[in-house]
Image (cartoon, rainbow, N blue to C red):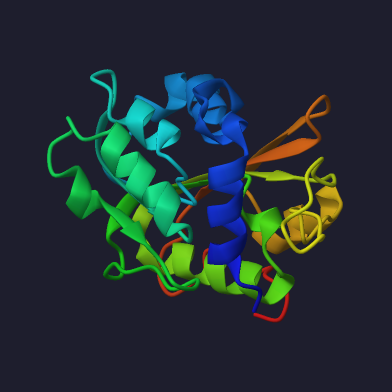
Length: 210
């Protein structure tokens, strides 16, 4: 597995755009989906939260969420904790992860978001991440995410493109089997909505190799 923490600590520390809300795919996606998200409530988790722009917006009074975030970059999490210090118990709700395992109980969240994260992973790590998202989402919970279907304009410190898995719309549809999906042609980004199925059915049965 690539050293994602090393890669994204470097990105956080060297790319000033990472610290601006207007450059955050998560912030933009939450803003666009506000009419839908205000109808939901409960615990929410932002996977790949970075410095916490999406989590911060979901914590606003117009929503009814108890927000959490995880990221592979410990330095992004530290920056998020510093920036969001006025929020109650924020240190307990922002966690660094060492791999794709999410440090939460089964069926813990009503909403899991994941914006422009999956394409940054190798395929096997995409599989593991999607399975973990399915594990922590409660019955009738909601997944809302976005994936980019183009190469990044940035290479990592090792010379590899930051988007490690660039695939077609059809590939991502097959992998995630969304209930609803929309395509942003300008950004070449696929937005995905999915509700947790009942019984023992997997949330993402189309995951490659699942």
